[in-house]
Length: 151
Figure 1 (cartoon, one colour):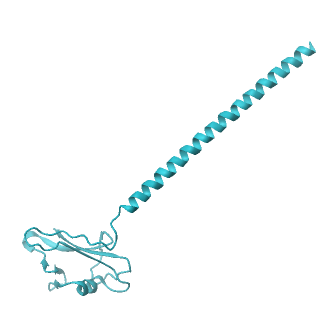
Figure 2 (tube, one colour):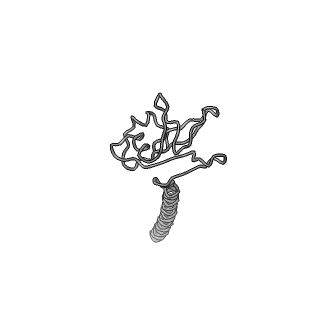
Figure 3 (cartoon, helix red, strand yellow):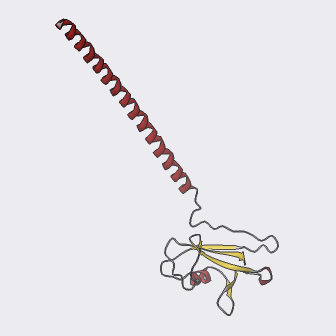
């Protein structure tokens, strides 16, 4: 009887050892799969971020749209200069006209057409400015853009 108990005990211990071994192998498998999935997610996310970053328009590139009728340019852009206002920089870089109230009505001989409800819109770093160009003090690296738009 004791021999039977010893044999049964050794059988069940072996079973527990095998089960623990199987559990350990299963845990290693799950950890490996989880690690691979995590690496893939991080790489895909990082790759997407870098791809989007590289597809942005360089800050010093001028984008121009030419009107078919007059060959006049409908956009004008330049970089900011630390401490100078956007209007002064515009006047340094090109021929401009302002109306009596101070609004820019012509850039590079391209006049905003009142009959077409056009105006020169002022943008800083891709967003319409919240202040006028004489009040906006530029920083190095700012992208200042003027675009013909309609109201």
